Image 1 (spheres, rainbow, N blue to C red):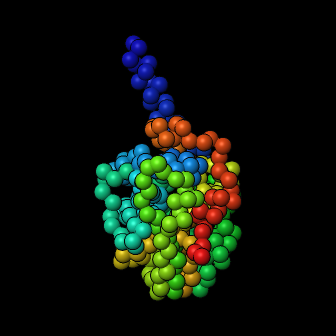
Image 2 (cartoon, rainbow, N blue to C red):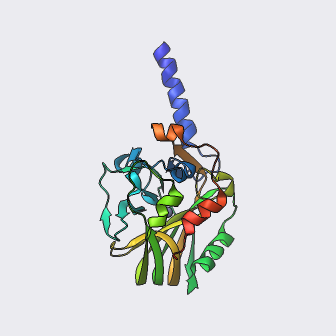
Image 3 (cartoon, protein in one colour):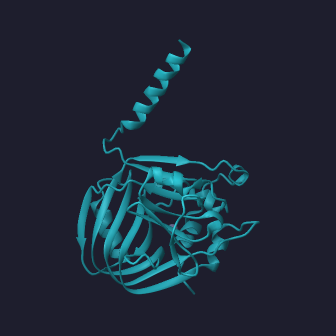
Length: 260
Ligand SMILES: [Zn+2]
């Protein structure tokens, strides 16, 4: 009897997960928190084999902060600090990633515009600032400025120190895809508030964490995402990390750091 009661309880839990209150059923699945990454929790805690079961689209980084991750159409790429791009093995680990199964809800054609103009235009299309969005922009770009970070070694510095050694890539006349998310401000500490965007070109030979771009023309797709699931690292570094959230200005500097 006891077993059948447990089975009923498990079925109830499963059905509660499937039914989404807002109806779309889209879930942003995240490994770790941005505050832990800021704090230098760089050891990978989930394999890409496992991560792929939660999404075909996304961004993140790698064990020891070895580059920028771009996930697109079920393929996951590693952009290293030397600019090289390779597809990720399932056994590779990530210390921080965001993924979802991309399912477009809104689409808009974009003309010649810079990154700020595109971001403002898309924000006007968001029905609320209280849910998450996955953002995809396929287009041609006269200029893309992206960055990647070199692998770190123990004892790990915090992210602010680590990105001081970032590589900046100025890419010209590229066809490619912007991959990323828009996160509500109340999720600060868990994720990057506002836009967090990465880039990969069509040839899958260049990309990284986006700092700036000039779009010639493109199409943006927005996936309204009303579910948010976080899996926390089960390791000593995370257990010992600060829990006070992130300094908004420090995070902004890390995410949009310009050279010079
Ligand atoms: Zn990034």
